[in-house]
Length: 437
Ligand code: NAP
Ligand code: HSE
Picture (spheres, rainbow, N blue to C red):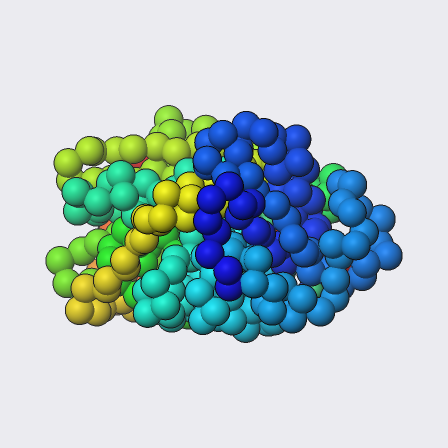
């Protein structure tokens, strides 16, 4: 790689020209003069890696820049920074390694690769004297990685609670507002292009688990891998759960929760009831929000657009400008991530929280006694309230909504299993965790 000296442009190899890549290319074109002043050197896209060079693009790019051969980027001595906006694990992971090994600075929006291989890539960057920046990998346009790396560094961060997947937040918002079922809300999200034709990564909480792994690794200075994060999706929620939750004073949100305890860290993604007055309960539609609690700052709240071409490109280009400015000055700032000796990840079974349980039971005397006996006497789970809802005249059943005090997850799961086997329980409906505000 040639040194970017004098007034020579800082060369960029762009991997991907889809939603985010087109946004990046567009703003680099439109703001070229301004960015050259900021950096002290012009920025030039030298090549763009795509799968199909013939595809119509959202942005006008000189067709001669497009290539399907990654060597055109990695063998080009004039490429100083590689921007990866392809997505997916492979070949993106291999290309990121290759870029760092060849001493290129790297900017990526890839949460899957950063969640799975972040520490490995950061170590390569350190060894080769370069850096990898990944602000766009979590929360699109919301600044989250830089605050966790730098601005909140003086704190001991005690918890992160986040709505970090816009697709699911849109679906849950429609279900809550309109009383519609999951399948109808999902179809609407797909029609608007928020949800993918195959929505599993979003609706099963996998996307949020990647993002939580990245944030928790920074916040708790330990390596949290995607498989450390318990995740449960939103597909089992019904319109009735939203109605009952509202009556009880709660919203239902897909939360990503990281919490530091004395000797361990909780990392979990699941739908949860959260008081209607809590800041996270008011985050609706495709918006994301992250609430960080630091011992010095107290609560800090970040909110904004977690996806979309321009918000995400904003984060990518900000990382690029930082790196390019450093290269132009001859002294790029480098982030060094050092994990504390591994803090243990608490198994989900050991987590304690409050619970909401919906059951269908025969509408007759003696039912409650049997259920409360399993919860209280067999598992020591204390009931905070029981409400009987919606008697069904036709089959003489009623719905019960039970709210518990804090209980251990393993006890709660065993109690639900046993309750489901009682002859007085027709159906175990939804079982959700309850968070405080
Ligand atoms: P996208 O629209 O699917 O674009 C992917 C681009 O990468 C396309 O230009 C594609 O080429 C190219 N590409 C994919 N695999 C390739 C391969 N094997 N070889 C060469 N080129 C390849 O994806 P996106 O929505 O822009 O997302 C990009 C990244 O940003 C992902 O990591 C995503 O998680 C992250 N992100 C996206 C958003 C968002 O709002 N979209 C928000 C936050 C983060 P062709 O165009 O020729 O097919
Ligand atoms: N699929 C993600 C979401 C966007 O719905 O939030 C990219 O991170």
